[in-house]
Length: 116
Image (tube, rainbow, N blue to C red; front, side, top):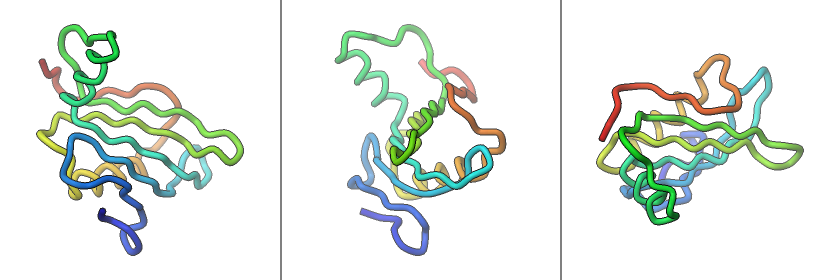
């Protein structure tokens, strides 16, 4: 495990790997919320969708999906990046990105070039 205490997040997965589960607090829509982050490689996301019978056709771009929390349920974020694996530096950068993203709200946000 990694990234606890002074870094302000708890990584609940063994790193490096194809994905990681991370919990942290950060701002969103003018208040501080608790986030449950599922950080994945694009290849891992594609493979999981294919195994579920919902293959992703064509190319994908890096993306973030935000699902708002309600009451005591934390906000959820799914981030898929074009990386060979998820490691501690990728987790750190993603947590920083989410904490610094102005006007972050529910929905899907994509960026970067398409990846086959």
